[in-house]
Length: 232
Picture 1 (tube, one colour):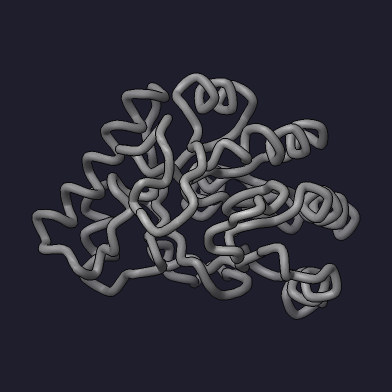
Picture 2 (spheres, rainbow, N blue to C red):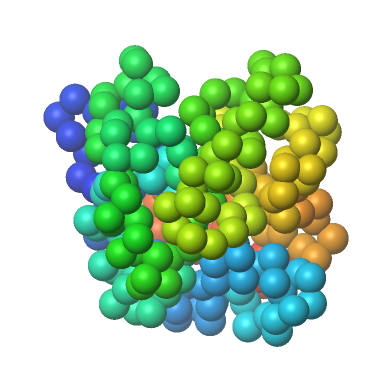
């Protein structure tokens, strides 16, 4: 799980959202060396439902929020290696800034043209809800609105179904997982954890959070040791 791939600005916001481009570059090189095959979250759904064969050591590289730095800095590195990835968009803020957090530094988000260009280049997109509000504080009608309207907006832009969701702030529970499934999401991801297995709840898939403080040794220990290279 990544957010921003860029040099940290002089007045940064939440530092744990940043990864340096050179750091990301080295991590991608290592994933290839360790035998991983990047897949999109849509491909994961296809594999889990038996409609597609799994490659060797599949791994999903994901980005939350949809910052422009993904287009400017992460995508060229992914594209040069032919690697797939998934970006979770906040539907009502496409082409704007991260206005859901007024106390954060405001940075540009992907605009429709950039999103469509990335889609043509093999990048997959999912929903990070409509407004990035914590889902656990919403009534059921408001929750359903966040989940269904965000799908509608992104599907209208991309012209294809949206099957996956990332929970804002990692806020979720049994009711939210149930509503997410009812809203049409085949899979949803958390912001913590390690490796998933075939029996992991598809509405609560774990991710390894990576930031600028993640040393290469930590990255290697999480992804290279034999006990962590099984399942999905």
